[in-house]
Image 1 (tube, one colour):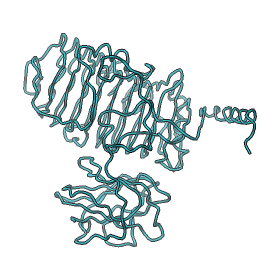
Image 2 (cartoon, rainbow, N blue to C red):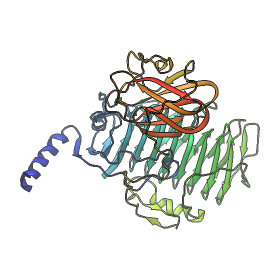
Image 3 (tube, rainbow, N blue to C red):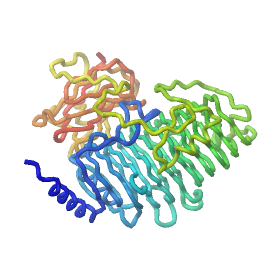
Image 4 (cartoon, one colour):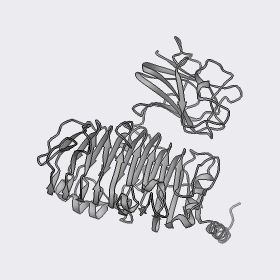
Length: 519
């Protein structure tokens, strides 16, 4: 029988008072997605929905954010964390749990998936405290300010990056944020928005990046070229020395951004990177596009940009500016739809939409700010999703198991198990992740053609494997998604590393064999 409204309200208020003591202000059983929907490359590879469909928790401290992550049923349980107030070192501590791996000196999103962090109410400010995303997927960060994160001096956090991503990160949408520093490396700061070590399918939209020596990078060195598929649109870069961004390998789409006072260089495409640079407005800046500080060339396709009071250096041994008359030297194919604002209206549109606490306004290509569309329903099919074949254990593959004698590694491993156990032909040995999610890979020394996989569970664990993704590790392409162990078929592909990623489970997955076949 339902309780009277007054009693239900009294109980709810009691819960609020108790939760407030730990910084968790509100908990509800159902969550809406972040306002609007992901754009750019974050819509690819299955899409980015964050915590849509899960619980909503309100947090006013960094500790409460970590508690919300650690309180989930597992590391893939969807959750939206609404943040209000100032998050800093004084109210952030490490929290432990099976569904999290947190730290005291940063907001740590490590080895998790399906999370939204969104600023609400009077605003969310991460003060001298960076946000770190590692070995994680399907993350949304929206409507927050991250400021003055240092790598030297005191206090330090996140290697000096406002938002940093590394190590097998997939599908991140950062939207309507303000990322700012108060100087360059000599003052203790590093990058505002960094991606490295195999980070892919990321979008940075409607954000302000300012007052820093370094805007951000894709790739930590000339050899770190496994990153890419990143979109930057409707952002404002202001008073930045360089890296807006720095691209090492990979593909980026950079459109409708407003660049003001880039002091040394801007978009730095190098080490084979390709950038499609459309309808941006560059103002009062130097060397806004080209290959700088290296002799390893990068490439660009340009159209519709405005260069207002931009100066250019002379070409040199490690300097190859695109101007003073920028021309395309490559072509870049974009797999998603998007609306381009005319470059002439970009300063006004970006001023009205970019940054935290701007009402999440967006542009549809009409040069007029719009309110965001309603959040997408996570139960609706995504036309960009790959097909989701259900493995059929009654259809055993034929031919040679290509995994025997191959190499193996992964992102997560429970104590006492080995990656190599999945390709030793022994059903008595197995790999198991440290929680319910993780990945295991089979790899070859030369390109190998594969079109079928058999995932075989160890005795006593049948049915534990839930949702999964199968990826070409080198490109990040999702070859198949689905649920349950068994046989997975997909169009033949030549690759050197194939990754099976457990994204959800009803128990502890135990993969005895990760078999691969040519056909």
